[in-house]
Image 1: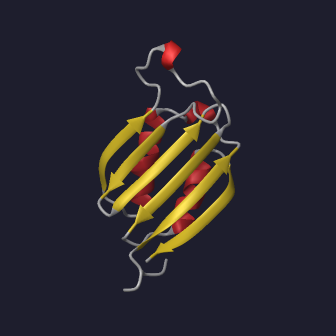
Image 2 (image 1 turned 120 degrees about the vertical axis):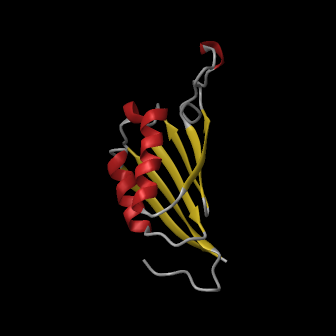
Image 3 (image 1 turned 45 degrees about the vertical axis):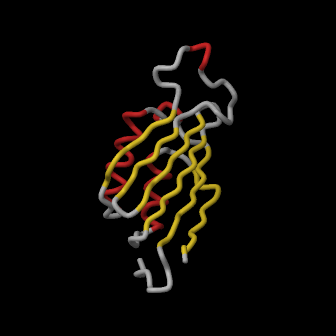
Length: 128
């Protein structure tokens, strides 16, 4: 992990996982993922917000493969971690953005292991 220099505001890890286990795409497991990830990359968790079909009448729930899933934003002291799961596709999309440095490789490997998927795309962007 290299410290961020004065010319960088932060960094963002953009991660796409496929062939994941959709049985773990639920609020309980996703919340625990955030708890454990934040411990690993030394981030202080703040508010957690959800967007999914939880509590939505069956006739109003999403049915399209690219819409049906759970989205959550875990605010952290230094920015946020966003996740989108797609149940019918077995895919997880994660963005970790922080102005505090973190080990992107640890975050990436932990995420793939947690969701039992394979990394199909990983990009690390330095924000200026």
